[in-house]
Amino acid sequence: MKKIGIFCGGYSSEYDISVKSAQTILSHFPQGFEGIQILVSKSGWIVNHQEIQGLFDLNKAMIIMENGAEWRLDGAIIYIHGNPGENGKIQAYLDMVNIPYVNSSVLASSLSFDKWYCNQFLKSFQIPVAESKFLLRNENFNVDVIVSQLGLPIFVKPTDSGSSYGISKVKAKEALGNAIEKAFLEGDSIVLEAFLDGTEVTCGVYRNGKDIVALPLTEIVSENEFFDFEAKYQGKSDEITPARISLEQSKKIQDQAKIIYKLLNLKSIARIDFMLVKETPYVIEVNTTPGFSSESIVPKMLKEAGISISEFWDSILSTELQNR
Image 1 (tube, rainbow, N blue to C red):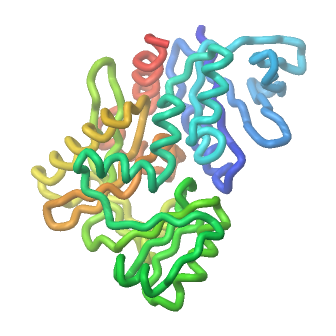
Image 2: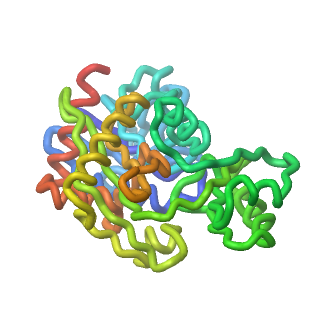
């Protein structure tokens, strides 16, 4: 039976969410594979398996249990939302120690994780994205100029943080400075985006053998100003699957999602968020490690598609590990 490490936790504000996602995956792990939880933190990488603790030795690239057992992983699922997983750092380490993983490569993960660079890359392929401006920490900016360029409201986002941490919707020019300061608490660069007035939908995409599969769309209707942390994880939104849009619009977005998945050379599951403005789907962001807790969207998409979580992960492991 192949031993598969599920790396979760991480160094960002999303530690607890990542652990919940990993627990959902572990509780539905497919037959023929043995899932082993590895909690990643700055103080060490702790292994919890069958009520026995251990550690993942970074020098040996092996699991060492308290009872003396030592294992080398046959594969890995990196399910860290944020640093150091979603941005590709653990992928780089696993590449060096020759442990295969199901996730997107270092380059694809790093590019997709950065909201600014990802959208600029997609824009070069004529994929519609919102008008935006990029700012580095300590860079001078002029509020009047920004508002004249992007209008109001403006979304202010850290470029490399998920789960809506540090994101603000700014309706008044006077509030922009504070929103920028808040976003910089999450990282060293931020993006300011023009408001898109439309229907927010998201599409899960993955590979099943040689085929790229787009799951049923979910429409997001937030009780708050936007799909923030409360809306995502504390029930402050309606997540309607399938989305209440026409079949033609749904197919157009699913086809666009598959094109983006291929352009970015993604692997495993990704969730691509769109704003449908009239008949044009604008990309909001690409998530290569979308939430997978019981409250998350992708499990709801799978249920709508008639795919069990165990069946889904069996497909991911079989597809993504066979050529690594």
